[in-house]
Structure formats: C-alpha cells, structure tokens
Image (tube, rainbow, N blue to C red):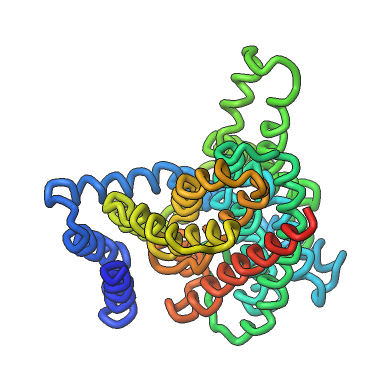
Length: 436
C-alpha cells in the first residue's frame, strides 16, 4: 500500500509540478511501480505493453469514431439544434435535470466509454450556447453514466457478478434502479451545486460557432443521428431474446451489435445525414474527421498510459494480498464486499478488476452463509468498485482532458462524485437488506 501511495503521489507531482507530459509520466511511474513491487525486470515492459494494448484495444476505435461523430454533430449545427430543442422544452433552469435523465436512459444500454464520447458534444453545446459552467452541467450527466456502468446489468461488471453469485438478473436490475436513482440525484445535480465556480475551458474540438436557424439541420435528423448508436445498441441488446439465438440472423445482429461496429455504422450514416445531405463534400468531411483525431490523440495516449499503470499493479498481485488481509476482519458481509472492492479500486484504478477480484474473495462467504442476499452483494461490490476514481483510472483522465481541468479540480469534482455514488450505493444496499 505504501508503494502504491508513493507511485500515485509521484504521478501527481510529475504531471502537476514538474509539468511532465502525462503519458510519459505514466510510463515512468509504471516502471517505478514494477521495480518496487518486485515484478521481474524482464516482465515489466510486457505488463506495460499489455496494459496499453488492453486499454486502447477496447477504447481506441470507440473514442476515435465517437470524436469524429461528435465533431460532425457539432460542426453541422446538430448539437446546437438539439440544445435549442431541449431548452425550449425544459427551460434553461431545468436543462441540467433534462440532460441527467437523458444520460441515465442512454447509459443503461451503453458502455461508459461510448456514452461519454456521445454525450460530450451535447454537454459542450449547451455550455457554449447558454454560457453555463461546464462542470456544473457535465458532471451530473457523467454521474448517471457511471452509476449505470457500476450498478445495472447488462453492463459487463454487474452482469459478471450476477453470474458469479448466482443472483437473479431481473431482481438485481430492479434493486439497482432503486439505488441508482438517489445515487444519481445526490452525486449529480445536488453535488454539482457546489461546483459552479470550477474554471473549465472544454475541448475546442466540440465547439462550433453559432449558426443561423435556417442553416441548421432538422430536429428529427439531429436527434436521430446523435442518438443512432444508442438505438442500434438497444435493438441489438434485445434481439438475442427473440427466437432461436443460434441462427445466422442472430450471428449477424451480434456482430452488428459490437460497440465498434455500431460506432462505425453511426458515423457512416451520419456522414450522409449531417454531411452529404446538408451539401458538404467528402473532402470537407474528411478534414472535420482529421481534426477530430488530432484533437483527441493525446487523450488516447494518456488513457493508454493509465492502463499500463493499472496492469503493472494487477500483475504484482497486490489486489489479492489486500483482499486476503481484509478477510480476517469480522465485518458485515455486504459491507466487507463493498470495502474490498473499494480498496482494490483505489489501489488499481479499474472498476471491473476491483469488482471481479472482490467477487472471487467474497463468493466463498455466500456458500457458507446462504442468508446473504446475492442480488444485494452484486450491488454492494458494484458500488465499492466505483469509489474514489483518481489518477490510476482512465475515466479520470478522460474527464480531465475533455473538460480541460487541473488535477486538483478533477479530484474535487470527478473523484468526489464517484465516491458519493459509492457511499450512497452502500447505504442503499444496507437499507434494502433490512426489508428484502
């Protein structure tokens, strides 16, 4: 734990005080962590490469295509149109709540990374058009995405926990919704009231000059194109439950439902609906997409660097040691599951690794004590796995770089928001345990 703490402090000092490029800082700290934690010299570079590859392998295509689609939505005037429709419907006073509700609905079928890159252009469009504080508007939306990622099936971590604990998927989803709604409200709109003065100049790639209403695409076209990935993922998520799941049609739908394929299809269709149909040439659109990639290239490297650091910590076996040492404490099982997941999350940075590692340790307890509710254990560990995201988590860096914040302000907003979600989740689980 002292080594992990030292490495985290070193990373913060390198980035904020020494002004070292965050990607280079991650590589330096990853090597330092590997040496201090006893990983053989010949395997440290392998851990770094694996962490980079695993993290970017799952996110690079999504982030790049999402940035292209976001840039197109912004530059075509679609984001301006969507923002105008929402404000006309809810008013500027309630626009934050409207966006939170939209993010919560969108977050149920979407992976967090996809939801993030899709919602960012909409957040920034509202921020620029109505001159609202970026963190105040954006963080509540991201809290909704984070909660659905940690609590609700069909997201990977809670779905895997349901299988491990032999829980009921439907009951877990129902209990998760009961906890998720107050968690989003407290960690989102309520907490954001204290963040209005945090200075933020969001990423310029999603900023477009106001266009005359006559030049804007239609509302239906704007909403359809911006939300097309959500629609495609929603359809492909439901389709496996219809008919024979082994036939050729289901195989095709499963392929089309892969997040990378969905984003590619959405970009191709968006190229026509918001590009060619609006009179733009392919050359002009190619320039838009090229600019989008340039703008997020450093973000990709930073996210990859955080993955390298996480992998070094994982390969050191530190998570197993932490979990094993905590088992000796005589604690309420649901709280113990939350605590193990939370400590591993803070140490390693990965919510998925924290959840699955904690589940492996706690699963034996459920066999010995059948009175423990497996559905609530899924949610307890899911809540713990979201606790205090900081510099070793790729989500921390996505938020920091897109919103162009200092590390201090990122911790004061993002890290505390995630911690509130984790604590509300724990309280909700313990309260439900009294009644179910």
